[in-house]
Length: 582
Image (cartoon, rainbow, N blue to C red):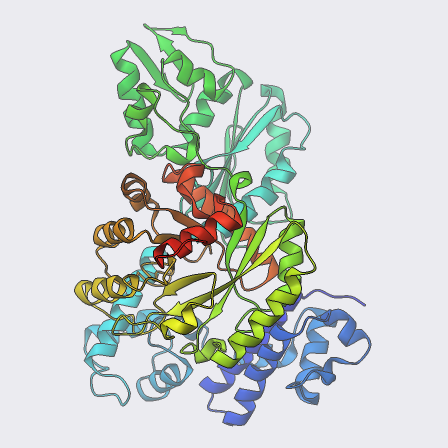
């Protein structure tokens, strides 16, 4: 069977069809059928290709004959004629409109039918003329929210999540490094520095002059290249099919260390480094280190550059002119945390709430990845949208965890919960329920439209509860989608230090929250940071790599990170807040 679509793509296609049908005003039952089919596929653990191949796709509850035919066409051909017809019947600009906060399919339909608005540009113009004020279901607050969303969309339209950029770059570099004539190479730029969002991909290689043209010819002809922007024998620029721009630079091998440092950046770091070098009468640029007018100081690697400048090596993640140069002069840069230092995984959702995999499957996968424990932290009861746990289901889950733990000798599943912080700062369960968990993550998930005072007060109140082990994603931000609620992070960190509470560094690449710029302050205050993947499936556990990169950017060491502790040490940390020892 020819399969051009994976499960994720098929789920996205079903969701798109539901949205298009709702915009067109189709029967609500038909709309709901596609949404239900999407959820059913997300929950199914069976191989979708085998289900189609054996004509068993219709056996999944929630998938009828018509939708089964759509899925079958997607699996066999990689396309859906029904979806293509729906797309053609709706203005293309409306899809981008749906990315704006406050604009769902119903509102998009109203804008289209009543005001003839079918693009973000038209919508912005209408908002600036206050044309939405008298439209049913809108009003001034909605209009202001839409304008803010448009501003965010324009601000980030050229940026991409670190995870997406890193995967694209690694695939691209994997092809380039094997080209004949390439001596050595490296992904540079903001990806190497582990910035949360990335504008484009920078790849640097070294080669002999006579090999440059052939290498560039091969680069611009790669199958993932969509558009050629510029081509030369030192630099070529392309747009990839995924939408990202990528630059390939070629230097002579003796220039590679200097060029790698320069093109890794940041600009601010480079300017500061050149200023520091000048104090020693050394000129520094992408071609070398020069003593006096022309004498080049030979460096075979980036480390040599820092050695020649009589300073400690600065890891790429730190190069933001955020005090790293002064630390390097004092040789005070610590040994930064490494993913090998992480002993256990905290903040994982199972199929008890909105996760895909069973607790047993998650535990076995985490053990195979080399971890020593896994904390299951499903959603609490207020998160009805995520199938939050009732007290009865908590008991059932804990009994299952006890059974699973009898199967392991050197691995342990911990009983946790991601407990919603209610609007008044109380938690979603009474203390006697919270006492049944090994650890508790407290998070804000709803009513995010708060002032700084309201948000800070809500979070600080929740942290006073002695059963709170970790404050989850403390600002609620979604990168490239929404700013976090305004909060006084310094006060939150101070409170965490006083109470003995940990703060989460949520490693989901859409969050990466707490911001790395606050990690130094947390470290100074002695607050343990918990680097958590917030995984909803086994593959999501790997997202911890992005959290570790951000933790390195914030200069964290192994001793600063909660889940570098053993399971017993972690439980002692949690129980110390409760005023009793384990």
